[in-house]
Image (cartoon, rainbow, N blue to C red):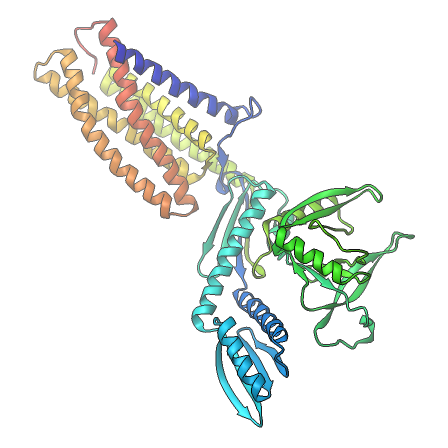
Length: 522
C-alpha cells in the first residue's frame, strides 16, 4: 500500500507539472513562463544563407601582419624597408643594405613564423622577396573566420531577441540562418550583415582631403557632420591614418544613452584594462588633435582631444534614431565579423503556410489518435479505455516537456509525436497480450496482471532504450528539422514508458485492490 501511495503521488506531481507548463502555451499571459515555440515551417519567418568572404579574412589578417612587421622593424631601427601587399596572401618586400637585410630576415623568422619567405633575389645590395601564407595557414584562417562569423552572428541574434533561431555552418564557407516569427526582416538583415569593425584613427591634420594628394600611410574616409547652428548635415571628407590607434577588439560593453542637450541617443562604450591603457596613451600623446571614430569605413565623429582620457570610456555620437543606436550597441557588444558576409539566398515563409501546416499536422494527429482510441476500446474493452487514458496523458506529458525545455515545435516534431502515439499504444498491447496469455494458462487475476507487466517490462524497456539511443544520435548529429523530430521522439519515448509501466499499472492496482473483480475485461 505504501508503494501504491507513492506511485499516486509521483503520477499526480508529474501530471500537475505538465499542466503548469502547458497552460502558458494554451493561454499566453496566464503566468510568465516558457511556452512551446513554433518553428519556421509553422509560424513563418525568414531563412538566410550567408556567404563568408574568407579571402577577405586572409587579406585582413595579412594586412595586420604587414603593419606589425613595419612596427617591429621601426622599433629595431631596421631601415630602408618597403612592404606592399600585392595579393590577398602575399607581401612584396624590398630591403636595402646588407645589415638591414640580415636583421630583417632574422626578425621575420623569429617573430612571424606563420609567413614563409619565397622568391628571394639579391642585386646590388638590395633584396626583394615575397612573404606568403602557406596553404595550411590559409585553410586555418578560412575555417576560423567562418566559425567566428557563426558565433558573432549568433550573439547578435540572441541580443536581437529572436526565439529559438537555427544557425549553423553549411558547406565550407556558408552559414544558414532560420529566424522563426521575425517581423522586421530588413532590420534583421542589416543587423546580421554589418561588419561592425570599430576603429579609432588619428586625423592627418596637416593635409586637406580635398587637395587630392594622399600621403603614404593615410587615406580619405567620409562621414556626416552637423552644423550646430542650422542643425543641417553635410557629407564631409577626412584624411585619416590607415593604421588604427585602437580597435573595438578591446570593447567590454556598449550601451545606448541619451544626450540631454540635444535629446538624441548615443552609444557609450567601455574598454577592458588593456584597451583603457592604450586609449589613455593615445589621447595623452595627441592632445589638441582629432581622433576619428570609424565604423565599417565610415567616420561617425572626429572630436578634438582636449586632455588625456583615463577610465577607458568613450562615446559614439551621430544622427541616430533609438533603434539605430540600439542595433549599433548590439553589434559592438557581439563583436566585429572577421570578414564581410553576403546574402546568397533569402526566403520568407508566410504565416499562412505555417497555419496550414499546423492544421494538417493536428488533423493527422487527431485522426490517427481517434482511430487508435477506437481500436483499443473495441479490441481490449475496459483495459483498452485505460490505455486510451494513458495515451491522452502521454500527449500532455510531451507538450509539457516541450514547454519546459522551451523547445521549438516543427512539422517533423509533429511527426515525432504521431510516431510516439503508436509506440505508446504498442507498449500497452504488449502488456495486455502477456496478461491474456497468463489468463489462458489459468493463472489468478492478480498473478496474471503481475506476470504480464513483469514479462512485458523487459521487452518495452529494451525496445524503447534502442529507440532512445537513435533519438539521441539524431539530436547530436542532425540539423534543424531532424533535431525537432529527435526532441519530440525522445520526450515521447520517456512519456510512453512512464504511462505504460507506471500509470496503467497503478490503474490496474487500484481497480484490483478496491473493486476486487473476479474477471478482467481485456
